[in-house]
Length: 129
Image (tube, rainbow, N blue to C red; front, side, top):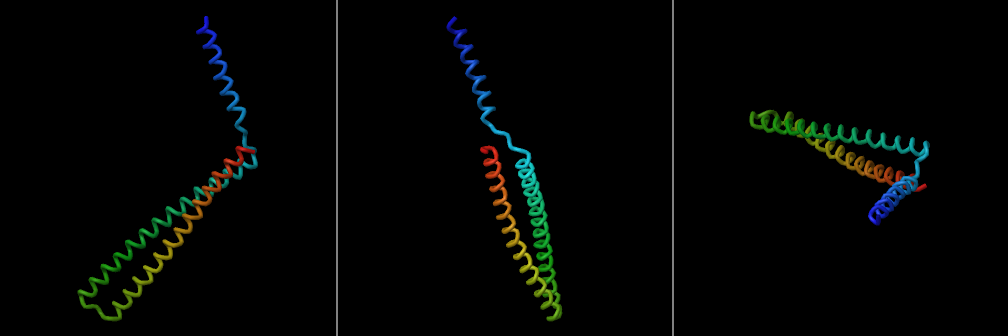
């Protein structure tokens, strides 16, 4: 008999705890939900953009490597000084461009991390309100 009463009491408390937890969670209103969804979509788009930028940088590095191999080959074959100078100038400008792209990518990554942090904070705040 005591076992049965204890089981029923335990069951009632667990059901009450589940109901209380569900009631304690507040629903996010439509306006905030729409804003959060738009932020999430923007973050995903930024992620796609960043991946595309990484692919482009990787391809530029590969092309610069090919230009370097070509310059070495031209040196071995005894190309004219003007041609070698033009190749070096091109490689130097490509290197500067790659460095600028990487710097820009780091800024984009920093911005995206901030956006993700803001989204999490906004979601947490919306649940509290």
